[in-house]
Figure 1 (cartoon, rainbow, N blue to C red):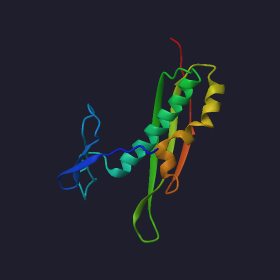
Figure 2: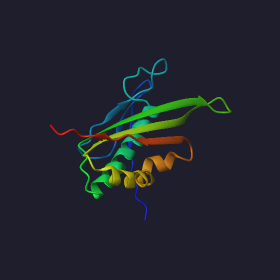
Figure 3: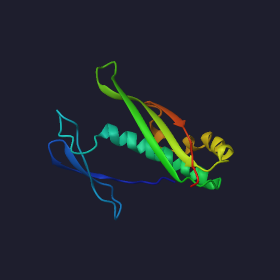
Length: 147
């Protein structure tokens, strides 16, 4: 069984495009290339890729922890990317370093350790791009402090 999806991009002007995700209630998103090519009026494809990888990994970790009945009160995700020229001189995303910082209750270390060995494999986006670029993932939990 195959699921399919579609997004539609419409050129606004220059290198600006409006993205329609094809999901009712989801607003359109303006994307653009940074200067000097575009005007930087929105995220560019490289940053969209980083956001997609970071979001997918965070969602996968949250799902695993929820299955383990661990309440995550917050999660911060930072994705750092590197670009480099390939052998033909074309600029490519060389790698992404993802740091996930879930805020967990005390005593959730065991569940986090189990999930750390599982969640990455369930992230559709990360596993789909791994053949083309390195994706380093680190989880740095933050213990929630009760007030």
